[in-house]
Amino acid sequence: MPYPVIALVLSMTSTLGTAPASELSVRYEHPDSPRAEQARKLLKDSDALETRIRLPEKVKVVARDCDSPAATWDHDERRITICYSLVDKVSDTMTGISETEEADAGTTAARVDGALTVLFHHELGHALSTLNGLADSDQQADQFAALTLAADKPKRVVPAAEARHLLAAGHAGIDHLSGTAESATFACLLYGADPARYARIAQGGWVPAERAPSCTNEYNRVKSTIGSKAVKIGT
Image (cartoon, rainbow, N blue to C red; front, side):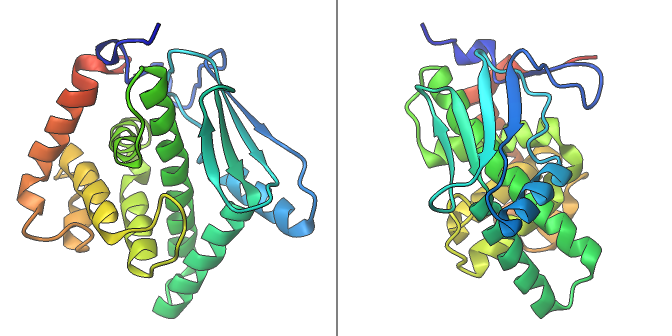
């Protein structure tokens, strides 16, 4: 029986950084090449897969070598898979963009971490959709991702919005991070979660200027539709 969405989008412990291991486990499989090892280390050091989000069922997160660069959710197996080759592709693409802009190493690292965090929360969005008995789609996964990312990792919201904007604008062809319209909507939802705190999203033009004033309403509408009172943070 699916869990009603009103009962759960996410629930968090009161201690920052404490993940409910009984609900979500993370495993980094042994890489088969030096390049994959670099990607494994990058992903692990980024903390992109660390979360305080509670799910209605146990979910496994597995980082591993794959035949092609991808990030996927398998409902039958209750498993999120992040491929090392995708991590490598994200890192290479973002590094190239940053080098073109002559961005410093700290900015580049923040953008890579932001992009990897978006990928994980997008797959978490697919998990929340299907575990709650909802029709699954990339659009809805993005909506869940905006809600969970803003609540779970507020310090990563701005880098995440910037990273996705840069990758979409550059037509990188990376699954879940491509598409300028999708990027703008995602940025709008993140900005709408707290316009004062995330003012840089609007200032950077990652959401169109004419759309920015409506982003709070867009965020609240999405929260009401798929989250309502379910977004709970421990005190």
